[in-house]
Image (cartoon, rainbow, N blue to C red; front, side, top):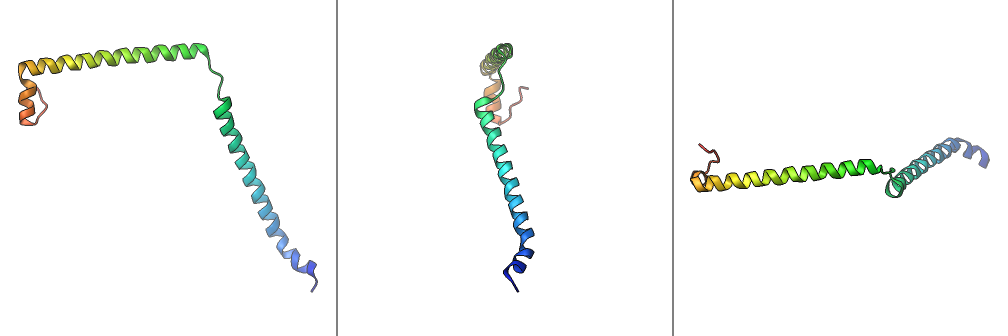
Length: 96
């Protein structure tokens, strides 16, 4: 037997391994490029959308501050009437 006859049956395995490695490297390169684009390139920001987003966040903040004030007022009213104190003693949170 010559050396060329022993290498022929192994050729498909080397070819398959090479193709698998090539595909893996291409996928890895694609992921790296996508990550770099996300980190450094990103999407182009629209100034109008940024202004709208800032306005919505300010509205949300104002609404949450109002809710916080209302809850504090309700707690004060319940403490003054004794409802909160009575509920704390019994372990319930109902205001009946």
